[in-house]
Amino acid sequence: MKRYPVFLSWLVGSALVDWLVTRTLARSAIFMPKSPPVILVYQGLGLLGQLAATVTGLLVLAFLGWIAWRGLRMGGEVVLPTAFASLVVLSLIFLVFPPSGWLAVSYHMILVAVIVLVGWRAFSWVDSNSKKTASLLVALTLLVSELYQVIPALYEALRLPGPTFFSLILFNAGELLLLLSTIALWWAHGRPAAWRVWLVASLPALAFITMRLANPAMTGIIAIWSTGLTLYLPWPGYALGLWLTAVTVLKSLKQSDLAAWVILLLAAGGYAPQLSTHAFLGIVALWLLLPAAPQPALDRPVYLESVPTSNDLVLEEL
Image (cartoon, rainbow, N blue to C red; front, side, top):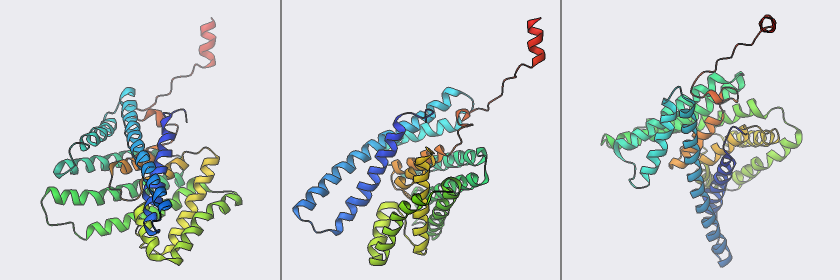
């Protein structure tokens, strides 16, 4: 953990608060009767969510800037650090000028390029087939999710009437890839786990199953608001994915494995996010999948120095 800035843990914490409070609890309170105590709690959740969203936006930009600075400082390749820096600059510009036209298309294409570059490095640098599969599926999920965002921006720039049915195909394919990536991450980082971990991890899945059986419509609405998932696939698959995800997070936290933070950032970012802050959380999560050994050499190869042999030492003594 010393390789990363200290505010990475703050980023994960604020992103979780933003996700759970702003996009889950606060929105779920819409279905509750609005008595004065409930209104007071609702307003408190709104303030907390706004604070968490602001902190998350600042920290994720700072982390992307740190990645760009780190890559440029080490020298070598400048494409990826420049792409990260461009995302930061464009996000600051979008605070004043809303993204539209070809500027929006360029922004999404930079995101696509970053996902491809980082995903390829995560896939090629890992040392096991299970981690390769997990990295590949996470990268493909983010890529399809971003391509889904590119199509409307491209149609707007070209002044075409509207996206084709291909957008829906991309969206559904990405949701399927997301479920597969949860299984792959568990296979790479979550097994084997103790029975206590499996027992505790089953609680979120049981809560989802209870809600789904009791009120499918409300569960689907909350799922879209919270994670961006439409739940179009058979619901037992989502329950299994939630269970395996919880197992992976608990086991990784116990072993100080960064896979836990990867999953939490992906969950906080959601699927097919509309806001750049949430899209950047997925980028950071994918970047954290880069293995520890090659990570310092993000922008240039490492060459091993020659080690003196016993004959060299004898000659030096003579």
